Length: 140
Length: 156
Image: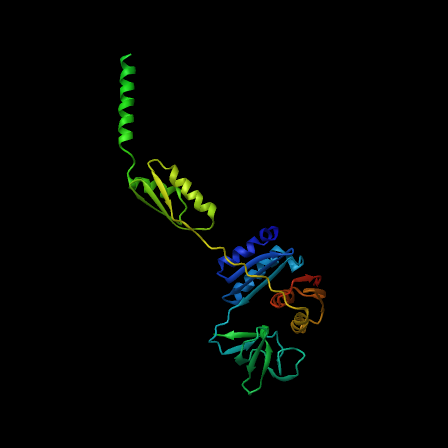
């Protein structure tokens, strides 16, 4: 239970922030925290707290898996790469051939989000393929 | 001597008075309610206390009964408190190494200064990274259901 104490500020904040399906359990010396946040800001706040408790995440005793809930009605997403174009690939994986590109800040159509990591998208030019979900921001 | 007699008779009268005037149901209810936890409801009829509500465990249920029984004027206690069913613990899911290898490769593609190794669910990170990228990388890797992220990265 020592880890639960160490990360109490984090789990308390998660509870206070209304993280849904929050699950906190310790197994083999690692604390696993899972849940779904209402928005990206809530998720980032939890990561800030994690970083305060364990600077630079060096201890390796926590797996913080809090995802951001995406409204099923959302149909478009913005490309949020640092500056570069985003690859659109034939299948879900970086080993898949690139079939197109979406520009930084471009808003593209979401076709299917059944894969958590790779979303099926369509650009305004009609190119369809998979993009890494981390670089897509759902548009309300 | 007279004073002593007077005091004694006063004491007798007081005792008789108190004995004949047991606390009223409403007073008992107020007193018990004040001592019980907030999630417990208290009802009193002719000195019989009925407790209802939902508590976290059996100990809390038993404690509530003890509190009610200790109250002056309570003849009996009906303990109808229910105990919350234990929440099923969601098991920790850890991805297979083959899945992890692929997903970690995808996640670290844009972090060329980071080297990764995966064994028995443990993702080991070596190399260098800047602070902003580190949080992004950790967020991405944590979503892949690793057993552990052994971060040996040097933060610049």
